[in-house]
Length: 113
Length: 113
Image (tube, rainbow over all chains, first blue to last red; front, side, top):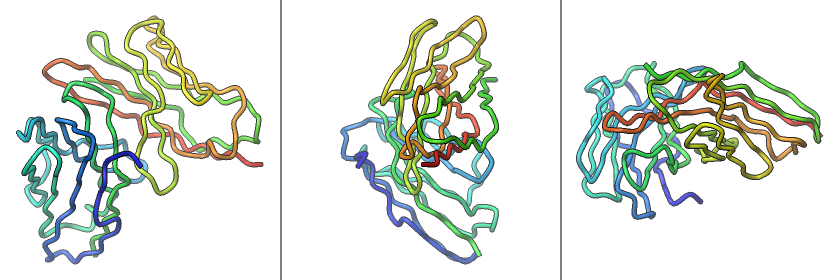
């Protein structure tokens, strides 16, 4: 138990569906992150939120839309995805933004048909 | 830009064997260096870190030394166990206002009894 909880753990969706991934951290951290993990590729940083403000959007397609309503919750809204978006999506948090000490959730395995 | 290069896996060892996973990096300034581990079906966990040259990070019998002259941060363990089977990621953080944690591609370690 890392203190970062992601739901759902597995998600299968069609290309025309709209779904959301949820992340919650119970650590009192001020920064939250979305990473994409694909086979045989380095982890890709997608979004960074610090004190609920988005501080980085790493050239991510607009079909991925993040939302951070408060410092404990982070969402990733998904719509009109492509099969190549199938991956493990990892949420992480840290005490503050400029540290490499991240606490990761177990991930949401997304399959786009 | 920053980059991390890890030895290609997979690595397969027998229990009690010596482990080395090589990691070299390219970065501007003086980065902090990290090893993360991902056990099957889980998210990443911080294993150890080093924040300046010649620092040695250690945890759970693993250790790595920050070598500025060779830009390396190799992971070692003297006697691996079956429970060490996982994917290991080397990472660096440049810090500052352009904070970003850069990961290597990961090395799969399998330890057989």
